[in-house]
Image (cartoon, rainbow, N blue to C red; front, side):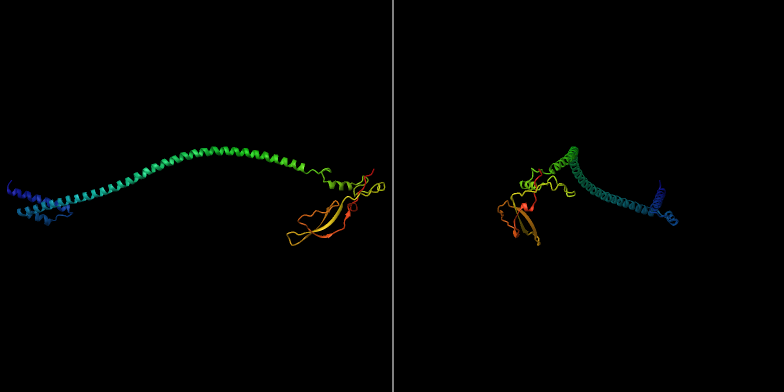
Length: 264
C-alpha cells in the first residue's frame, strides 16, 4: 500500500470516529464540518487521530477510576449494612431465646392451671352436692322445729291446777268458792234463803296497805299502793328501803273478803 492509500485510510478513519463521537455527544455533524474533514492534509489527520486516541484513553481512565470509587463506596455500604443486619440478627436471636424460655414457662403455667381447674371443678361439684344435702336437711329441720314449737307451746300454755298454785292462793280460793245455789251475775239468784249464814273465819292474816313512792330515772315520780301479807309478823326490810308515805290501819282479811260455807 502506497502513501496515498494510507493517507486516505487514516482520513476516512478519523472522519468516521469524529462522526460517531458527535453522535455519542448528541450533536449533529454539519456540512461545513464534513467539508473540513475532506480538506484535511496528512499532518492534520495525524494530529486529530492523536487527540482522539488520547481523549479515549483519558475517558477510559476516568471510567475505571469512577467505577473503582463507586465499587468501593458500594462495598463499604454493603459492609455497613451487613454489620447492621448482623447486630439486628443478634438482637432478634436473643429475643427469640427469651421468647422460647417465656413460652416454656407459660406452657408449664397453663398445665398447672388446667390441673387446678380440673380439681376446682371436681370440688365445686362436691360442694354443690353437699349444699343440696344441707338444704334438704335444713328443710326437714325447719318442719320438725315448727312441729316441736307447736307442741311445746301447747304443753307450756296449760292452765295450772289448784294443786300447782301457791299455798296462800289456795286458801284465798277456798275462801272465795261460791255455794252451789248461786248462779252467774246474768241470772237471778235462786234459793238464797235456804242457805245458812256464813260462819266467821278465824283471824288468820293481816293485810297492811302501805303506800310507797318509787322514784324512777325520769323527773316524774310514780305512786303505787301495794298490799303486803305479813302473817302477823314484822316486815323484813332490805338494804334498799322505800320511803313510806302513809300507813293505813290494819284490818282482818275476813272483814275485807266474804266467805261462805258450802251448803250441806
